[in-house]
Image 1 (cartoon, rainbow, N blue to C red):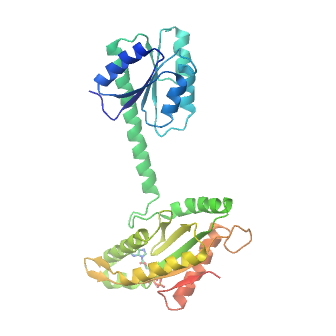
Image 2 (cartoon, helix red, strand yellow):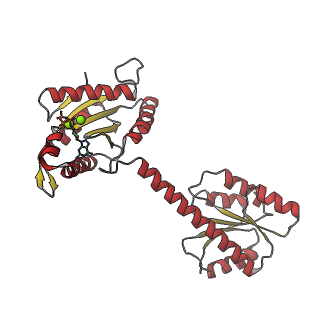
Image 3 (spheres, protein in one colour):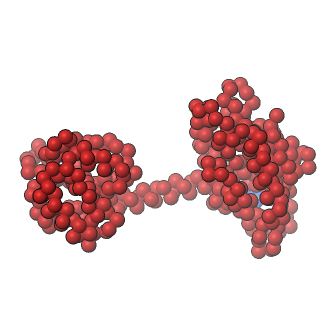
Length: 309
Ligand code: GH3
Ligand code: MG
Ligand code: MG
């Protein structure tokens, strides 16, 4: 039996041959939908729901070759394995179908066993592509995540901040950034050891992640320093957010194997300016301004929020 996750789109303008093939595929366990011409098929394929396309060649409106070409040009979430069915099985026809982007070619009317075997081999390719894509996504995600805290890492910060600033500039939207640094964190390590220090860092990362809105994100910048990016947020709002987070950090102790460990953190806040030449006109300058404000918080006694001037 076929994997019931595999969805097939069957395209044929002749209702009888459509019904025969649909019956065969469904009996084998493939979820099968149909279309009666290339145009209708393309609209369905573009929904991204199909893994295998089994299409007739000669059809009104848009033929099978044109359909294949459109499918290959489309930006789809996964690979669509494509088989072309035709009565014309000349060498030139086979070449034209493969050149148009088909993966395989079947004579019409198809032999039942051959049809199922070829669809099954398509399903194998689809699953292979799915697992490769999932593995890639996992690796991509891991390469942008801080392994200790589960926040994003510095690589993500460098890449994403530029994009966020471009968007803010293009749509004239505000964007703010907070640099947070744990206070006297060295003392935590000295008193409780590095492993407990790690627990405390995880705790801090988790407090940040659970107190943000959906479009905000946090990256671990260095040892015990984090950067929080707040799109669509002007300086005043970002400062209120930092103040709420500061209070939460100071009031919720980290639960560690050595018991509850209380910490505080200092914050520096800055808002991006799209005006070239301003103090916060680039990612680097924005970070520098927030860092200078953080330094002010440290200098003034720690456990506080300072906005960049
Ligand atoms: P301040 O209030 O001025 O920020 O003082 P601080 O002690 O927090 O700052 P300092 O920069 O002197 O020390 C930071 C400490 O953070 C020292 C370093 O050992 C520790 N640290 C950095 N990365 C890690 C980590 O991944 N795990 C643990 N446990 N400690 C870390
Ligand atoms: Mg510190
Ligand atoms: Mg530090």
